Image (cartoon, rainbow, N blue to C red; front, top):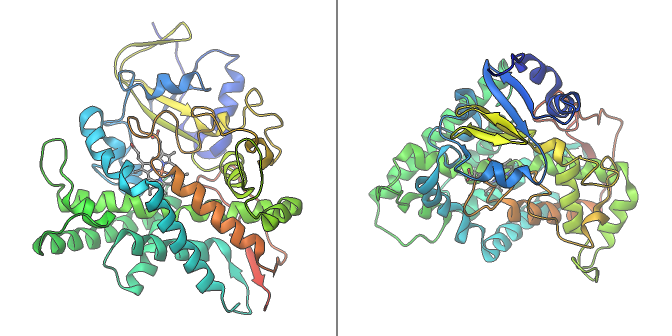
Length: 416
Ligand code: HEM
């Protein structure tokens, strides 16, 4: 008989990012067992556990995510909730042209242009970097994706995407805002999808067209609402790079020598792995700062791990934040040190801020190349600006999911 385990939901809400690492410390090397919302749960940790977790014979995603997370963060029927053939065919939308090097480079150019336009004439007042970055990213990604939105709708999209991410893991007003934001944007995008379908059929030249024309594993087009959900799965996480931009600013403020190296970076490093400082810097921001605490699915069948049984249907979590700070994997894990990524590329299942395994065949994030390239570009832009940083609360509370510097990083760009 399985041993009795205590429910951990309250502890998760109180401790946030520290919850799973704490449980792990107390488990004495045994498999972490607990309950979430009454559901039997185990947590896996470490690069060896990553292929085990991403093997779809072990862990499935259907019915794994709670309704409040779907109604805010991901959307009902999203690629995140599919398994096997259905998942592979839908995932094709995200791992083909959308994220090929040419597509990524075009998006980065658009983001950089938007940033430079925004800061061409310093406004002579204080700016909240997090908010401004979200708007810059939304303008760039909506245009890149070919969404036929007005300027006003694009600005609203920026705010709604932030709300969807900010409110998924909490109750109360933040959560309500997130639900309303998703409902509003799904409705708008579904209408645009229907209008596009009423028009002349075109080859999929933009991500919008590709989603509109996509056929699922059953050969059918996506219903307009699901198409809207997948469009949001391109736009929302790209806007969410604003969290990493705020963290990058925090890192530059705290460790000015790192900022100096970024500023001086002219792409002429000849380290075995990299020619730039910006890319290792972006990897270190993704490793060091907290964003996704863990990912999860349901045991597809009775499993065995580390000599212990995991009955079918158990909620299986993979410890993301803990792995990215594991001293067995990272020397001085709480030291912000981009140099650790200069000598060699991060191993596939070692650095997992956006999931592990293979993005094409599994559930790993298809937007990693976009995230790294956009973050590297904006970190470099920021490092080259002259600005002052007023007194503010830059603490990053670990109990809040997702977290960010409390002030959003306020700064005053200097006139040039
Ligand atoms: C999945 C994080 C940016 C699209 C994921 C997952 C994480 C993640 C943790 C779940 C992996 C799993 O379930 O095992 C992030 C973070 C980002 C980011 C922290 C940067 C702020 C992006 C971008 C895009 C994107 C830029 C697209 C343009 C997706 C999609 C999935 C996903 C479609 C679902 C994949 C699947 O279930 O097969 N992301 N992501 N993400 N991400 Fe990202």
